[in-house]
Length: 286
Image (cartoon, rainbow, N blue to C red; front, side, top):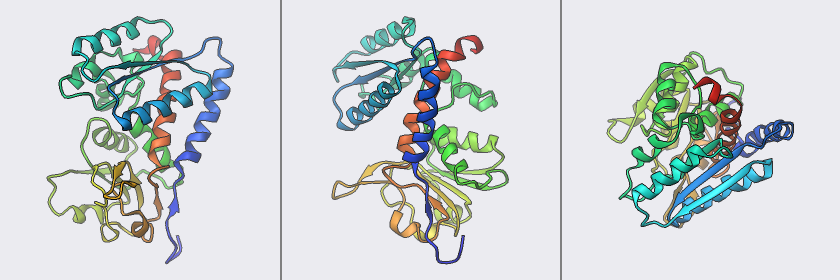
């Protein structure tokens, strides 16, 4: 990239549409429609938006979809019963339980209850364990999408130094493992990391999933780096923003994802791709 040129925007919507277009063609040729179940507990506005987007895209592609909504005070056993019924349903090939769940429900217990070959989000213990072993089956949707976005730049991942900010089970840990599989050298940072800037300034690939608005400043980013902003936060004015100070960081980065319009659309695309994979392959391989 020429000196002084702003970063190229990694268009998550465009990349997601490429995936969805291929999926639609594939689904049109199948004898059976892939079935996706979405389970939500309560009426959290963000969760309503996320689940609604997933359901809408699935229907557009020709999926059979079921939306299951439980009240916010639903007992844990009621949610587990819902998951068990979906596990047994022949119409459902993949399911997601929208997170976060109310505090009185054990999130891990619920995710653990989803059958591995119906775990469309790829965050259950069997699929995460396989990822750790390098035997990828159903990959976590968001990390899978992040890798696709990085690959869309045309910059090889092999040999690069990647820094991941955040250590969640949904994003931080699995994206670190995936980047290692692709032969990047990975440094994981988190809320207790001292002198964060020391690590981020050395990153060829910087993935931030900390959930802290404006955490990543211009001076923290290496010139020409690929910057992937995973978080979706609300600033003091209520505007949707990520971890990265987008307007400033794009002046030094080589490639950067916007918020919104970056990782979010790819997560949905990967979720739907995973569901089709679950229908076509998983029962024979897990």
